[in-house]
Image (cartoon, rainbow, N blue to C red):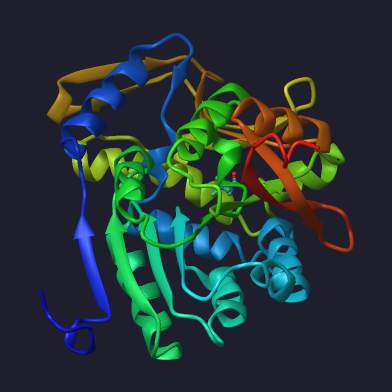
Length: 336
Ligand code: AVJ
């Protein structure tokens, strides 16, 4: 074991329990032969997709990132204050980690902080880790390139000090409410009584505001959605003509979710050579590419409770669009 002074402050591990390429190929084949057609939103984030998502976060219509950043600007110290001297901050789906900076700034004075970002996009991890280690010379960073389920295994090994587990940016929105409860329960099962989880949740609101956030005037979200087809062209040797598909975002108010689709503008067939598949499209036929769930406070509470967690404290932006929840493992005393 090296002395801690000579230990590198930055380290990246790649954790993949599965062959991601084979999984992409078989998921695409299954999704495009299903009725109705669908593709998983987890495949949005190749390097171009991650770049486009970062651009979405800057859009005037996409209020989510700004609202969450506002909450952290106002409340980061309050959120950080109950944590003891040394703490491990684990972030699921860290992305560019700009919001995390605000929390780290609040935590770092007087504390030793280890930061463990877990993200599927390795270049994004490397970039954000480089930025953070430049800004915060005392921060220890252990970056994990993995999907959530592989990253979760890593959570169990990071248990030598109290942990703050971050799941920001409405990333919970890609799960159904049932899946979200199951996933939170799995995290909860790795938590000690001293651990906390901070979850960023987008709130239910007017249809017009939501639909504009997912169908912006500059067409960045459309490009983000269509990039899924470009990725299939590149990696699986497909011949999708991107100009023959249209981006669509619809708010399903009953289910409380934005649904994104790619709509075929005409009758056509597309061949994807590496998986030996030809897919026929009718005019107007859709590929369902993403769900983004919106929550009421009651729905957030229900999911937390189902996961064995207790909503200790929450904060919202001034306009009440977005909500940040500090969840603790439920215990007899915390329940009162
Ligand atoms: C990264 C899942 C939180 O649902 O708002 C943004 C992804 N899709 N615009 C979201 C997304 C279209 C985003 N999440």
